[in-house]
Image (cartoon, rainbow, N blue to C red; front, side):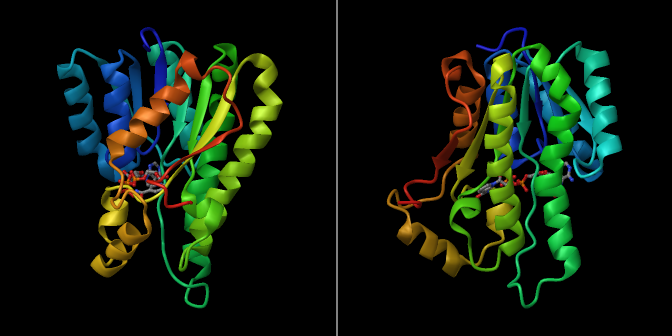
Length: 246
Ligand code: NAP
């Protein structure tokens, strides 16, 4: 489905990003996989895994919160792979605390990575994406729509992504570029593994489908939004949450 397409996925060494990279590889895309410095070994392993599948992948270490590093990464992708068709803004962290206990650093770190990271990557890649009538998929969260106890920083960043997505969709629709966000509920990754068992149980209880989602299920949605089958979908926020938002 993505033969001759170049896809950049941020935060791709594990979780949703990794599953998405593997799904794109299955569909014959050329991958640019990104993560921060500490994840080099995992990125190398993912590159090898994709190559064993007969695919092509380059990895790029860059902190999405650092504009200069992001600009360098996009320049390297242009030099190495010649173009960029799809940008998946997936990198994200959380630093959960009630606002009463949250420090300025907890706030700033999450905003810098989860929200400014999306600005940085999109801004740096914009010309390349527009040039190819490409697609941008931003990973927001159900928390960005409904809020969550102990996540004022994360909810603000993820809600910001939704406003960013809708505004950019209006700006660049005329070039045939689509910009969409997805809002996952609770997905089985390292991010949610740390949750107390009691809270996990409660989440499952309130989720009509009675379980957490799998990274591969989110990956499928992302590849759909990046495909030409989704050419008339832009500015949307697609829930993938087992019904938790109902
Ligand atoms: P994950 O397994 O922790 O993967 C996120 C990846 O992003 C990690 O490898 C992380 O590296 C990397 N990263 C962190 N800061 C970065 C930076 N500054 N620059 C580049 N990469 C960076 O989490 P995930 O659950 O797959 O989450 C992926 C996205 O989905 C996130 O945006 C998250 O907010 C969103 N999401 C997840 C869920 C869920 O239930 N899992 C639900 C809704 C939305 P480190 O491990 O070193 O931090």
